[in-house]
Structure formats: structure tokens, C-alpha cells
Amino acid sequence: MNTKKNNQYLKTIKLNDTIFKEITAKTLSEIEYIYLSSNPSLNQNQINYLFIKTIDSVNINLLRNKNCPKNKIEEFLALNDKIYNIAIAHNKALDKVVYDKLFFLNDFDVTASLEYTQSIKKGL
Image 1 (tube, rainbow, N blue to C red):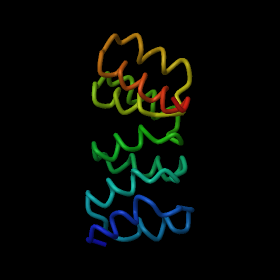
Image 2 (image 1 turned 180 degrees about the horizontal axis):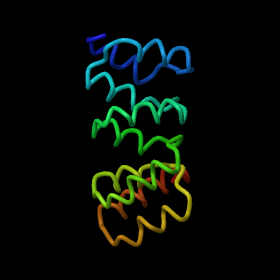
Image 3 (image 1 turned 120 degrees about the vertical axis):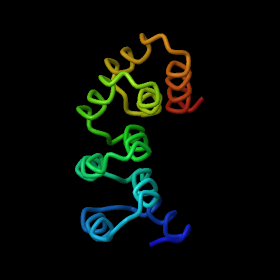
């Protein structure tokens, strides 16, 4: 699975548990995990599995995913890491509590990300 076409496939295939297990049963490169982690059809169990890989770029993609478990968002928010905070701000499924925590950090880049995400979410 080392071609660009296969990497795009990892990003766009409609995943279910069987397909996900088949893909992750193979030895994937870090780049392949990055593409897989940006797949919008990941479910919470699949997301939790990918967090175990502890690859920063994968974590960033997962935090942006609307299916990211709330406990993972809270865990990474507690790290007070600007890059992770921006990634979380790009998650379209944020609840008000997390939104407010990010907003009140008074970080221009995080706030800009929140506003951008909200405008996309509202279709503006």
C-alpha cells in the first residue's frame, strides 16, 4: 500500500469494522496512518485504535473528526497544546463546553479556527 492512489483510498473508502480490521492488519507506514486518520467515516472504536499509534499528525486528524470521542477531546484539550487546540477547534461536532474552553483561551489562531468551523457548519 505505498502508492499515492492507495493513500487516497485510505482517506476516502467508506469504512466498516471489517474493512478497518483488514486495512490495519497490514503493516502501515506513518503516512498511511495519516491518510487513514483523515477518513471521515471512522467510528469511535476505530478512532480510539488510531490514537494508540501516538503519531502527532494522526492525532490532529482524529481530533478534527466529528466522531472523535469527547473523552479524547478533553484529554488533548488538557494538554494545552496550541496545535491540538486548533485541531479541536476544527471539529464540527464540538459541544458548547469545549467551544467555550477554546474560546476563552484568548488565542487568536484558536478563535479564528473556531469561527471558521462555525461558519462552515452554518453554511455561510
